[in-house]
Image 1 (cartoon, one colour):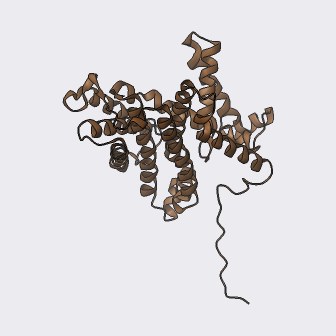
Image 2 (cartoon, rainbow, N blue to C red):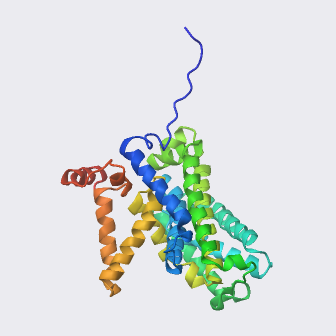
Image 3 (cartoon, rainbow, N blue to C red):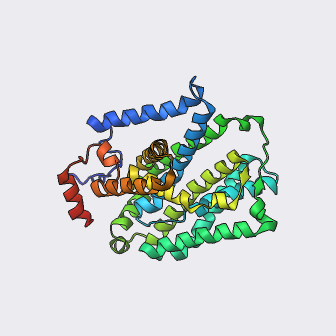
Length: 344
């Protein structure tokens, strides 16, 4: 009998992705990503479409980041806009007060958001459920008030105007590719982590945190890392957005609405999936555009959008990715199964 030990079986989040229907869909997704990569050079790539896609890609990047903490660990963070705002102010202040160019300033802004997430994450990640959600909202709201009131440092209600250092940075293509690379980097980071011990730890925490502790997983460290990486993505997006708009104002970069958009994109596409938040960002924008087009008066927008999201969550709690890859079918049986499973 051989004494050789068998290699441990590892599960990859991409297992089965290159086979059958899923393989075809993954190929289409890659074509879409390549299309986005060359889009600025296409003849119909107007300034309007560049701006629109830049916004969608920034939302996709932030939603991918939110998915680390909200989708994989199951901690519903409703204050991720705090990291977006810190990234924006960190970048703006580094450029105006320290005289740094954009890229070093962007790194400082993102690092500031990440460090802040670690510092607040250590205490508040001991909270669970709605207590954690309320704490994150409170922190984001408080930061917005501080930024708006601290006139001597942040400019207060007057805000901060950012300079341009390089003529190439004036073009819409520059910001488009910054947003594109950030979103692509987020997808790669998700795939990389899910193939490592950290990714398995996140999923274990989401399924049963007490059991994960008993298995020897350092749940505190795993949650803090998820929170910090979530902050990193939002901080980078905030820095890019600030330089793109050349202006930082508290009431603009600390909008709770931005966190809701991150969450909605992830929910629509599929929380706890690699590609769900990315696809969800495009779905979210399409829904908003259709609502504005067919209902110019905005009173019903939130109601209709909320109803659509409720239907998605009832029929497919794991997002539209379940339909896209064929794991779920739209039927009464599927509805009843989800009602029984999730006690809707």
